[in-house]
Amino acid sequence: MAASSPDRAPDKGEVEPEPDITALTGIGPIVKREPEVKLLSSVCGLEPLSWSEDHRISASCTNSISLIEIVCDIQSYSRDLIIHRTSIPVPEDICVLQVGPEQEVLEAKEKFGNSRDPAVSQAFMLDRTMNPNTGMLPPMRGTKYTSWSPLGCDGNGRCLLATLTLDGRLAVYSSAQRLRWALLVDLTELYSQMLAEKGYSLPGAEPPLGPLDDLAELQRRHRMQSPVRMEWSSVCATQQVQTNNECKDVGTVLLAVLMENGDLAVWHFQVPFLGRASVVSCSTIPSGVSQPSVLAWWEYEHGGRKMSGLIVGSSVGPVKILPVNLKAVKGYFTLRQPVVLWQETDQIPVHNIKCISLFHPHQKCNCSLVVAARGSYLFWCLLLISKAGLNVHNSHVTGLHATPIASMAASRQGGSIFTCSFDGTVKKLTPVFTDVAVTFKQEEIKLPEGVAGRRTHGLAVSPNGAYLALVTTEGMKNWQHPISRNDQVQFVTLKTPEDAAGELLGSSVQNLFRQTDLLDLVRWKVLRDKRIPPALQEELDEKVHASGCAYLWRFKLFLFRVLYQSLQKAPAQARWRPLHENTKLFIGEEEGEEGGGGG
Image 1: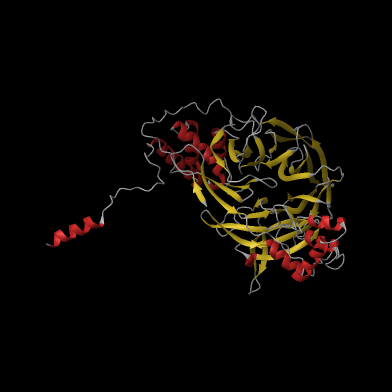
Image 2 (image 1 turned 135 degrees about the vertical axis):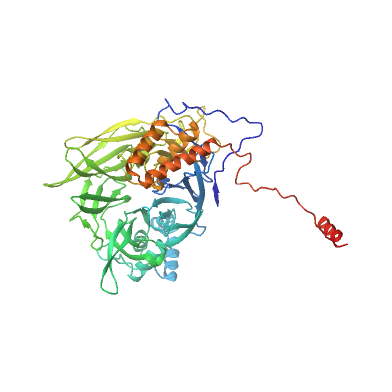
């Protein structure tokens, strides 16, 4: 299923309103953008909204994964966001983990289900991992989590999508064709085959607890291959030996998967990732974290040396960084031992973790800021490498929300952190460095009408911080809950078009596609005002004449194309509708004309 938002054509009796030149002045950066994207089913899972580097948004739903792509179309007359929609359906069949020979597994399950000991039978029947579709309980159908890869990982140089369903199926998808998604590999099936070849016993991990007809052993085999979270690393380079003994740099990307028992399965993929043939290897690392809940990559650069690790959080409180051995990866070094960021078992679960790379203005070096949502608190940890070694400073930010944090996102530009709770409150935290640690400037985002007062399930920030996407449902009206709830994705601007234009002019990326969110804000203003802002045009002309950069020429051409579209009259009929210009011709009339000509 795929659809795109068409250009709206005015009715015959409708008069097109005059442009409001001052419409964007004095209203601040927080403005609601249309359209609102209605989801076909209710949202579910952890962090239901995610925004990729190539400007696609994934919304986790019960029946499918709704995918929304922001397109900056120069041929459009509409001032609304140009959105292309598609979806990935959740598989109909239930994912059943392979834990041994089929006949032995059936006999063991029948034995535990018919056990006269209630402690055994009830523990077995209520375990949805071992019994995904047993009894009167509804099947576990829905999306648990999605994760976007970095840009340039698929065959078209765009992002891959890793999906995890509620029944434990981990898969990787790619959009090889426009608005069409294809399954590349089922990692759950691949990992089960690898465990079966090793006899469900990994070096350094928990040893087997007995035969398969032992309940503890059956639970262990399920937990060691039940994913909890997965996250992509950045694209790195490895050296591959050719047939002539020369070394060639090959792009690779890692996908870390956190299992229920605390193990970390690190998949090594070759870029571009085209399917099972692109899987290089898979290694398993025991974390030693009990009741793991969240995962994130930690990447740090100091003095030209890159370090990498995996941050693991627990549902009972602790957070720590685990070293990942990247000997084959060019330019990366690993930690010597795990680094504990928070060791208290205070029964406050870790819901989400973000790692932000920043420059410390006082220490004049790079630093790493790790933030984690723990209940209604925000845990932060500042890691800084100095001559004395690795310095760790941590604390909590309290008083953010009255209820637990539902979702958290971090902007790639500036290090701003956004949090929200189910009551619709959205907070923005900006890190402010001190001589030793860091403080946060707190600011509550005043959402515009139509977005404020709604129940918020998740949020995501665009790659350059221009837009904030929120997945919301109706809240209470007159102290009454609505009869039915409609989930939808709404968009709010975080920057003004003037700020976006300034960033585009001074950008070091030199790529308009990677800055689509900023470009769309400028397009919106030109369409509304029906002119290019004089200050922007003057500064752009000066830079073009001074440097002659192709990026600036493309930006200038884009502005004039949008200006040309804004001065055109909108078509009377939407362009996507077929034109019926040819009149219908009956067969009898055609035969009569042919007969007359022959006489």
